[in-house]
Image 1 (tube, helix red, strand yellow):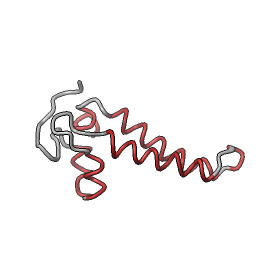
Image 2: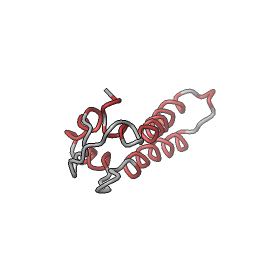
Image 3: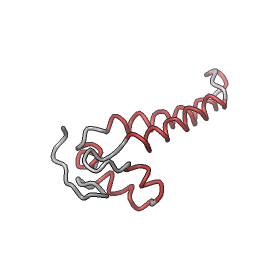
Length: 97
């Protein structure tokens, strides 16, 4: 699934992985008191992960912020994960750069 996605084909999968990791850490680590992370720090990490994904995962050609657009229109998430083309300018990207 991800090997054909526009995010992977443009070499931005690491940004998606980092954004998801920050979201998960910020959301779940504060649940465990022994981890020593406060809810405030967890919330900041989760928001930072979400913002990172929305701001920095973008089309190399037209500059469209893919996950910002998907946050506004939920139907765009599936094409970002399965289609090889930009959801905005329709440029098709080849194999992973």
